[in-house]
Amino acid sequence: MDLPTYADVERAAARLRGVAHRTPVVTSRTADERTGATLFFKCENLQRAGAFKFRGAYNAVAALAPEQRKRGVLSYSSGNHAQALALACSLMETRVTIVMPKDAPATKVEATRGYGGDIVFYDRYTEDREEIAKDLSARRGLSLIPPFDHRDVIAGQGTAAKEMIEEVGALDVLMTPLGGGGLLSGSTLAARRLAPDCRVVGVEPEAGDDARQSLRRGVIVTIAPPRSIADGAITTHVGTLPFAILRAHQTEVVTASDADLIGTLRFFAERMKLVVEPTGCLGLAAVLSGAVDVRGKRVGIVLSGGNVDVAALAKFLA
Image (tube, rainbow, N blue to C red; front, side, top):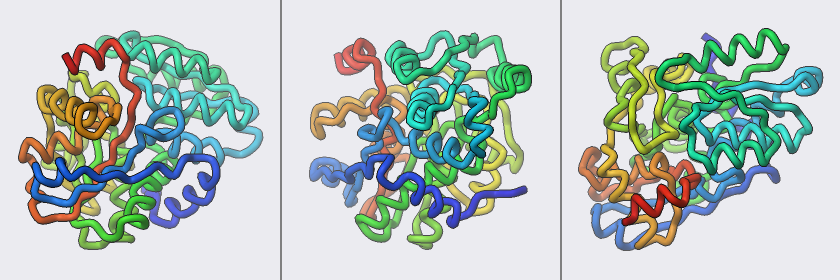
């Protein structure tokens, strides 16, 4: 299996320099006091297109041959990868088609269209988005760039952790949200090179712990589409490439409940004045719930995105 390496993360960082935002790392005395740790938050909610996904999407499109970019690209996404890929393609004047679930947040659908994306809707509970995308890719001659199971996407996502460790120094623990595994596997590659003793932990929704099951069994487990407010992490299985990386580096996985996510979302809004989408709350939610003991540790937490519907945010905060 041709797995990406840290060298790919470095190449991605070079492609992204001057294009992606080098997002800030922020701290919170209140969060430190509540956890007994020193926490560093990498604010990918302030990234272009509102999420870390821009890193992997841009890197993957930039790595295509000119004739592939000319024909156009295709992907599937619940929202953040869709927006990121649409923006990346608009910057490189490439056509893009996205297969999105009918129940994707309205803000993510509107943003994807606003960046020039052509959307094909599907029902996430009765249809297979990967099969739909493969069929469209074959019929239209488009290059398929999936949201997580792609070496250039994984390498691009790893640049967020690379930046954070370079800025704040070695970490004892690094935590990221976990859906298909692109962010976690890319972060694992960066952490293993820059902070070899760092414990890397992925956090997925309690209702959809397919990656945790997969790592325990040693094979990729596919589950029914889970229902969670963490829409960016609603996947039925971890990607093949991410799974191989997570197994090779013994990356850990824990879960957080929707109730934990709502409490964490409110903490970010009330105490840190940050708008973070539920998926982006997974890392801190696991720390606050006690799923990961971080007392006395230096902990990096990636806030993966801030693309939350305003009406939904108001409901969560009520």
